[in-house]
Image (cartoon, rainbow, N blue to C red; front, side, top):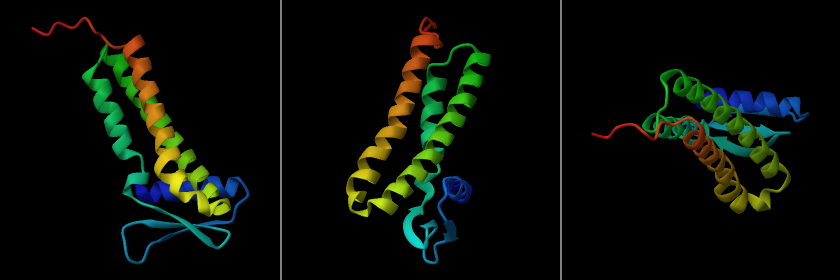
Length: 138
């Protein structure tokens, strides 16, 4: 999955006009993302959005509504999170390419806030619109 995210990020970067490469890291389980011959980022397991999608899905299942609604919301939300994560990796890479001195705020603060903020909004929307809070807890 990490390899797929790295390759798709490369494709998006190329669509934006950057010369991008993705190569396996020789010493660790990650992919090196290179823009215009400049190494900008490692795409690691935590960058593939799987753990965020699992977190999202767990919450939705815990507050499930009707089966069909729950299933389609899980599917749509997971796809949205995956796409947002790809965009996040691309924007982060471009940011690190152009503003490498901002890495201490870009990666650990701004970009996690974006992805987890979106998940939180998806949860709030789910609870307020589709979950079934009247389930019997007997």
